[in-house]
Length: 320
Image (tube, rainbow, N blue to C red; front, side):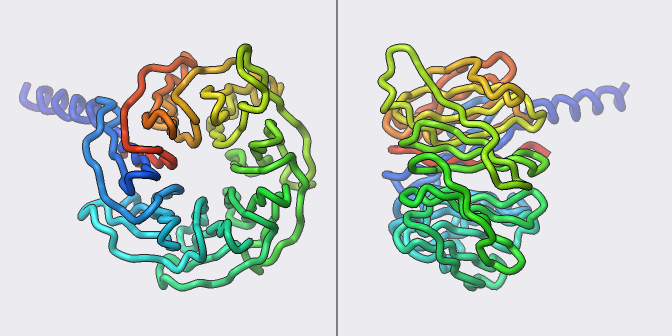
């Protein structure tokens, strides 16, 4: 009986564990920490000026934070809740991507048309790569062989060989590309174009577009529909697209490339991340200063959580 009771206690302990959700608040210079089970804020951490993109390291013990107005990427130690180092990121870092091996950080520098590659262990710049005007989005392929930067003014995807650190191809997309995500196996790239109002799907092998997806929401002016953040479910079923000032998230069938539903969330929805084994999706809603929680299975909004001013980035530590 004692062994049975202990087993029950251990099981209950496992069931109440939660993912930890981090939200960067652009105007407050803080990170809000949310418990995914209770869906409540459990901590607020001070960081540098204008935090936007955030990415966890491979060990999930440190959070990289683009402190854009400080022209640095900060390393936030999650145990002490202190910034322990500043990386030489280049000017105005906004979005970045961590190489799968965890040693290289690819950073988009919007103001000087560069991608800065930083060694996260030595904390030194490995390379600066000249790209088009206003680089914004950044992604690294699952196999680590390719990095891609979007350039808002040039309207290109710049394909970078991560071994040579050189551009090997450019793909023209619609106006003002903002965000990119590789599919789970890396065979496709999804790229949002904010002013173009579209998402383009690009074949990784040929580097050519294979689909262009548009959006139309009853009662919303077309110029308000501005695709930004994208998240793909690992089962290959859905793509979720944040539509900025349209205040909706579009849900796309990844087989047909058709929009199957729009969900009303907070004002100026920007970035997104999955939690709870992809049962939940958290969206950052900048103008309303909150986070919407979406039920991925039922495709409905569960609730909103008030955070800091102008929430921008989101990252999640999954329960082990």
